[in-house]
Length: 184
Image (cartoon, rainbow, N blue to C red):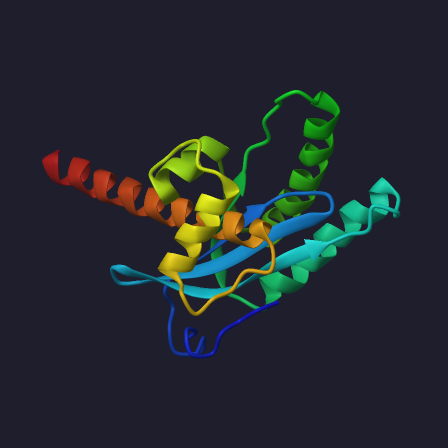
């Protein structure tokens, strides 16, 4: 787990909303935690939950769940976002991805963290401006937004994109809700 002290805050003094983004995968599940700080977004940490492809499926899913539980304990996460599964050419791969997603959702759900799901193209559109952005473009945008952070795997940058997409969506929904309430 990477957490940068020069970017982070003293968690005992603030109560801004923290969001976790999760990019599920059986071998590497990316995660990133951010926090709203007024109009800015602070990076708090990111990493990957890794499993061995030599382990049986049940052990891998439990490992993802346990690693995410530990991550959640280190932050004050109020909301989570996870990438939706999509079936391209390999339905079996989508099924396996769905199992990894379930481990992530259980980790969030058992901690009473609300969960939102976003399609990969929606996340890329919000984060990079292009719905069909490549992994390299997502990584480049992540590095531009947080130049002090280096990502060991693209899964981390993807998780950061998911978290930022979620934060923007939450802010937009709140703004719209407030505007509607004022109009009534």
